[in-house]
Amino acid sequence: MALHRTPIFDFHRGNLILGCERNLLMLLGMLCMVLMVLQTAVSIALAIALWIGGLPLLSMMGKADPHMTKVFARYRKYAEFYPAHSRKNYANRD
Image (cartoon, rainbow, N blue to C red; front, side, top):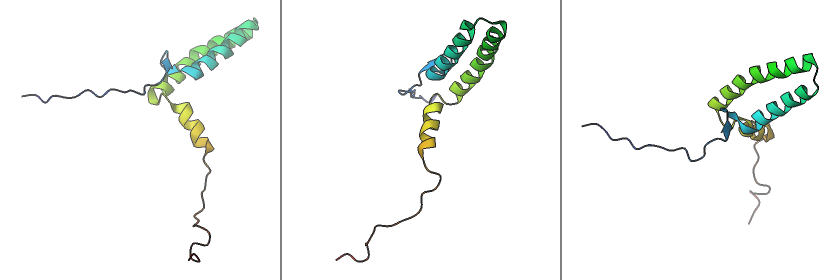
C-alpha cells in the first residue's frame, strides 16, 4: 500500500513575469527602451546586449528567490551592530 501525500500549496507566490521579478524586469525593459529611443547604432546594440544578457540573470534570481529585492531592501535597513543594554534604573526600583 502506497503512502498518500498531501500536496502543499504556496499561497504567497512571487509576482514573476518571464521568470523574473516584476519590478526588475520592468526596470530592465525601461532602460532598454530608453536606449532604443536614442536611435544610434551603439545604443541599440547596447540595449539588445543588456536585454539578452540581463534576462537570464534576472530569471536565475527569480528562481533562487522570488522576493530577493524586497528581502535585500529590508536587510539593508538593519544596523550592523546592536549593543547590549538593559532597562534604566532597573535595580533601584521600589
